Image: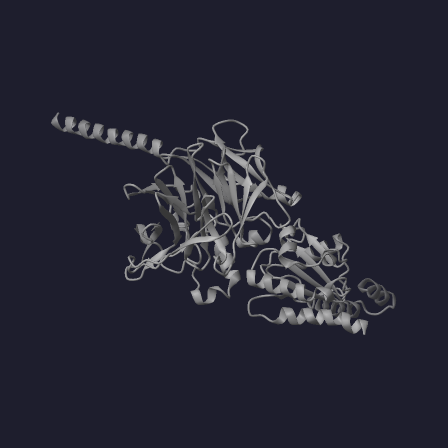
Length: 386
Length: 180
């Protein structure tokens, strides 16, 4: 009798744990909850002049002013567009050399008309300028408080720059600690009052050994007043850094089609890589990877871009590279993962007045006097793209 | 040719075996001559190129075809573009050279970047394939010479390779020799 009671007790305990774990799984791995909609009626269309094109190495949207800042790297200038009218209202021309020289502009942050922070390529310097391109101050990004780490600060593409509480925040490429072979996610803080650079190396992680062949970038976006979200090519997780507490949270933001174990390093040596363009192209096509994460304050969503594995031979036969987008709520519950329709380039996207906008290449090819950004929305309704 | 030979051979009352033997030699010779033509490599298929040239009614007989893709090896594309810019007067309306700009998704940017003349873009020997009809998948600019109608092995503008410029100049010299 005693044995039967013990057996029943153990059975109930086991059943309880099974039931509990099943509930836990169902809540943490929610399947597709939203659908993706493409709303071309809510597009933003910019009027392009003869020297403005589809591509920009850096885009920034200002919600309070409803302005879009567009880097024209070929001319070393920033174009400012009124999003309501689509008209260009201002250009900020930068000199390469001389007293106001900033080199080749790679990224920037438009704080106000007389406070524009500009990052010069290969200069490792952030310049404070006014809207006429005059240099008011410069901040050289060198720090001595990072022994053993050799990170490279970069403000470019979706590796954005933010100015919060008199401090600049930006990322860079991976740094490797030589002795332990560990990589850390580089996040930088530059205090413009003390002119001190701090390297907030967060989340050390042991990643695959080997040369990473330009998939070592770390992407940054602002999430609310005090948080920064950090994404990179090679991790299943997104990292959230709290500026006030200095703490970092790690959130699983994994694709359903691959995991970080599938992201392999480039096998060739660094010496040969520049020569062997074809091998590099094959590697990039054949390696799935994560990309930037963006926070959407309007819809309270987080987006993370994905580049899926592609076959070189299929690419040669004309099949385009497949890119996707994962959507999460603010608690990092995954709401869906979608393939992006062809003709859209996520490197030309920003979170604007109503959500996520992405440049439409086909519309530009039909008429290159205009650049149209279509609105992507994610809602649990019918008539979705997927 | 083969049909005519077979007919004459059989009608001339020769032994059938000898006719078949001769026919074999003719067929082998035919295929041997075909083997001198380049059929395909990893990024270019002759049949697709022929289909494109036929569709666009481009005469390729004894000509050089330059194919410039829009995406690929940056330094290689820049080198080829630089050649086009510096040699544009020789290239424009050159009867021995046909230039195909393929997969060109941003013609406006290409025009602005290269500052090539309006004459260049109006040239009769320039074809802009912005619909990717050619299906050219090389990361490198290519130069393809046709001897008669036989495609020779393509020469690619790759890092460190000097063949491309040399062969292009050879093609352009044909024009100069012809004019002289």
